[in-house]
Image 1 (cartoon, rainbow, N blue to C red):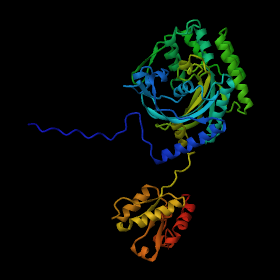
Image 2: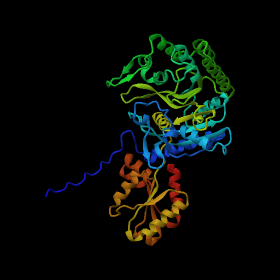
Image 3: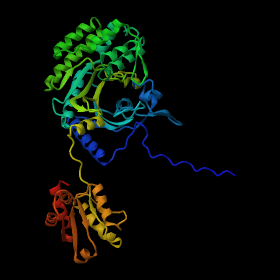
Image 4: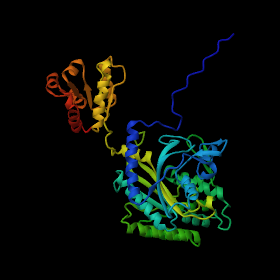
Length: 498
C-alpha cells in the first residue's frame, strides 16, 4: 500500500496586493486619522461607521476597472443575502444609509467616515487592493456652497496633518462642463443619455490618466486604443481625430487665473445648456472659496480633473501634492494625488427614486502617510514599553507588581515573558522593542529592597561613542530603593522623550 503523502504546509505569505501593518504604521495612521477627524468635527461633521460588506445591488457598478472580475469588487454569493461584496469606497455605503434612515437623519446630513476599502484591481508598486480612506460628505445640500466648503476643508485638513501651503493644490472641475464638451464632440446625446455610454466611460478613464500617460497616451485611448510596455492592449473610445482634439482642448483649457479658465470653458461648451450650467457653478465655487480665504495658491479651477468613478454628476475635486520625491530609480517626480471627490446627486436616487443632492471628499490615508514619510514630516515613532526583566522565575508576582505600578503611573510597561535563562536575550528583546528602560531585580536587590534601573538609550549612546573609563563614569544604570521605582523611571523617560 502506497504511503499517503502529507499535506503541504501552507505558505506564510501575504496575498498579492495586500500588506501587513505593524506597530509604527498603525500608530502613525491612528494619529493622522485623529487629526483629520478633529478638522472634520470643527466643520460640523459627525462620525459614521458602516458595514464592510454591502449587497452588490446597493454598491452598484461604478468602478472604472470594468475589465476586472466582478467589475473591480470582491464579491461572493450568500445563501441569505444573495450577492454581497466588500465595500470599494465609503460613499456607496453612505448612499444606502441616507436612503435607509432618511426619516431619522437631519437634512442636510454631514458625516465623516474612516476605514479600509477593498478593490479587485491589478496591484502594482504602491497600489494595494486594501487601503484606508477618510471621507467627509454632505447629503441634502443642492447649493455649490457645499462643494466649496468641502474644498476649503480639504485644504485645511492637508495643512493640519503637516502639508504646508505651496506643497499641495486642490484642483476643481465640473462633470457638467465635460458633458457639455462631449455634447459638442458628438459623443453625448442629451435626448438619449444611454447612447455612446461605453465610449464616454472610456473617455473619462482616459482623461483621468493624463498625469500618468501624458497627452499622447490619452489621445491614443480616445482613438483606437493603446498598447503599454508589457504588451497589454487597452481598447480606445474610437473617437475621430476631430472629436479627440475637442476633448484634448478641454483638458488644456486652464488659464492663468480662474476668470480666464472660466472664459476658455465657456468658449468650449458653446451652446450646450449642461456645459454652461457647469461653467456657472465653477465660477461660483471660485468666488465662495475666495470668501473663505482660500486663494488660488491653495485651490484652482482645472479642467483636467474628471475622477474615475462613474457616479459624479457635477463639481469634482482632487488634492495633489506638488513637492518632488525620488522614485525607485532615483529620478525626481511629483508625489501626485492623495484625495478626490465630487458631487453625486443621483446616488441616493437609486434607492428612493427621488434625487437627493450630495457631495464629498475622500482622502487616501496610506498615500498621505507615504508622502509625509518621504518628506520626513512624521514624528519619530514612540519608544517601546519599559521592560521589567525576570531574574528569578519564582518571583514572577514581584515583577508583575512592578509593571503594574508603572502602568498605574501612566507609563507603558511589561514583564519579559520569554525564557529568562539568558539575561542577554532579555536585553536583546528590549532593544527590538525600542524600550528606553529595563528594570532589574535579582535576589540580592530584593532582599535589600532595591531595584536596578538601566537607561537603555544612554547606554546605547555611550557604547557607540565612549571609552571604557567614560562608560564607568556615566550613570547608564543606577540602583534605587524599590519605593522610588516610579519616579526614577519617570525621570529617565522625561529625559529620553519616552
